[in-house]
Length: 397
Image 1: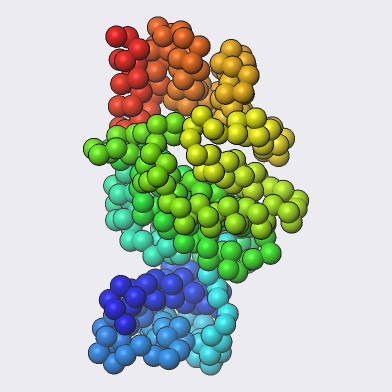
Image 2: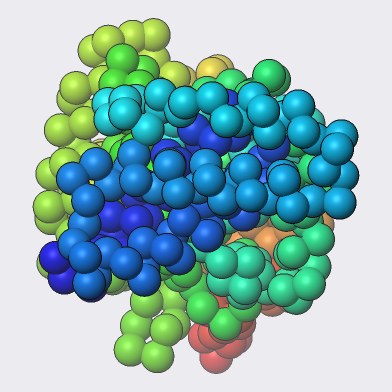
């Protein structure tokens, strides 16, 4: 087994083992410490001795022993003796190779008591296997800040699987992770490939465990169809390349094929959910041979469906752009004017950026340049700011 495959195996097994111990003993933090020690033991022993036939069971047994040692060695030994006695019972989970607790663990990390930021951090730490330093770098916060956030999240979910989050919350967290990776909200890079890749990997895992859910398939399709454009979204020095200007020959054809196949598989199942609709929109963009050949009337119709399913200012904004592509910029600008009073969009850069784009389409160069400059001032993403500033400068020439 290569080093890459070895690390991949441990990465897949770690959340399963953590899920078993947390479900069985209800102490998330202690279980995570025990799993880390078991993984360290595997790193030390498996390269020389070979990977055990039941590698998952091996890790569970080692982590189980470490957990017992933790409890027996703690200051509150007497108080926890009863727990240690309970732990000494045979651990049948180690022999059950076909049970996967990853989804349970993912649900736990998306506990309803956690904020979305905490749920994302805990998911990346416990299920994704990212270190605290990696997560802190991804979200541009100090490592100590992220460590405190994760510690608080662990204490919140200390009770184990008694009150896990629901599938909708899990999908929302995964989509938030993906979006942060696909279009970073701050910092010098447009893309954070480690986050989008991890979101896709975890969504694949959820789909393997919940194949009957059309929305899980829809979310995976949406991620694949969106991420397929990543190779063409930035230029040689990391600059943003808008969709209409992208070299479509650089899009990932295999990811597009898989995403479209998923859309065709899940859409007929019904009832249709928001991720399936968004995946269908993404598929129309990916199937178009050029920006000019995009089926905007169908995209506009799908945004109408999406707005009925999940009304939000962001969906309304995207629908305004689609409306402009079908009915002309004046129609889109009228829709944007109606959104101007929405506080959720008032301080962000998306509304002035969309307005600038439609004003440019309408030939209102000076107004468009002003809107581009306003949008540039509001974004914390360096590539987005540079792109918007450049657009404003070109219109002022």
